[in-house]
Image (cartoon, rainbow, N blue to C red; front, side, top):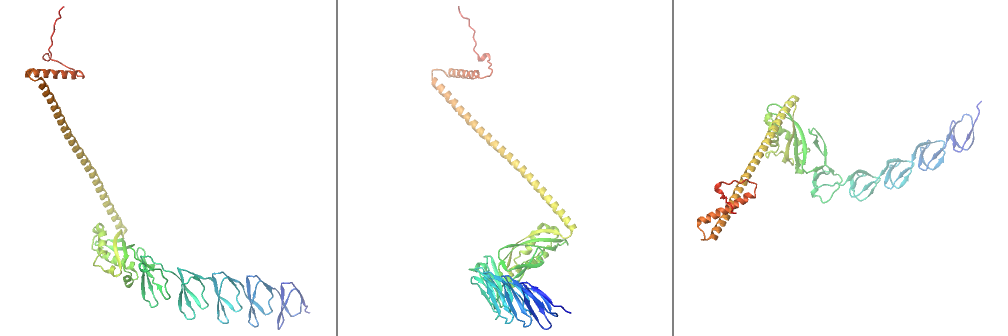
Length: 464
């Protein structure tokens, strides 16, 4: 004997009953009597938040309906949940695209908005920010109906229409005076724009693109991984390293520095797509030929001249044909490929350096000695000048003293006139001179000696 079942349902509960030919539901609250041979399943109702919605499909008809929160509901007997969604919230600068799978119609929804998908709609483009178009930003848009392109430059927050796709966000090209770009149009033709000849910046038009050149990079120029769109016409340095062999079969690794410049962009783009690679390859060929004609000793003595003459040659039109100019070239380093040879080369260089240092030291010592001799000559020359001046001054002083003495003597004899004879005048003059000399000697510390002839000494007895 089969007994029936009783089910007690709460407010949020539902009983799904399934018999042999049909299904039905009973919603709570309440008590449900279930007959034998009926399968019963208790399930909870569905609660949706204000930010949720749900798509529900009818298994019999295939129809889909949408339930939007906030709500609480029970599924019908033949319904099932396909998917629970969050409500799409769009800000003022966002948009999204949805497509109706039954009609194929696309709908564009812009913010600010909150979006609940309709029954047959699916998300085609997730919420996306629009493109801010300003003086430096534009949008290249493709029409999916006819495939045409247009460039939108009007200031706005751009949202594509249902039949439009954003192909590319383009930045305004700003060129410095020393920069140039090469523009490739839809027919594959090139147009060169120079910064010094452009009155204002510009956008690439539809079907136009900047030509990308892949230049060789690195010290050995082995990889073409330097992508160039803006060509700089200013002079620039470039380093290159490669192997050479001297006349006496010594293998060297040569490091060279080029100071070069692009002077004609049109020639360059017409003849090469790798200007640095071409320059280095041609230079290497010319340098190898020149080095191979010189033995190691000669090369080490004149390596800069040999390399410079090999590159800077008026008869070589290779660089001019490619629109470039080599201003100068210098040897940056010279090393031997073989370690043993390099060691010998280092010894030679060291000995040469020592010899130069010794010569420099000897030259410095010679300069010191020479300066010392020159100083002594100047001193002796100045001494001679001093003696000459002293002699001249002494002569002048003697001449002055003699003239003064002559004047004195002349005046003395002149004043005596004819009152005395010449002999008496001379005796008086000599006597006065002796008195003068005695007076000078008396005032000095000198010892004075008199001979009998010099002193008229008399001894007389006094009378009393």
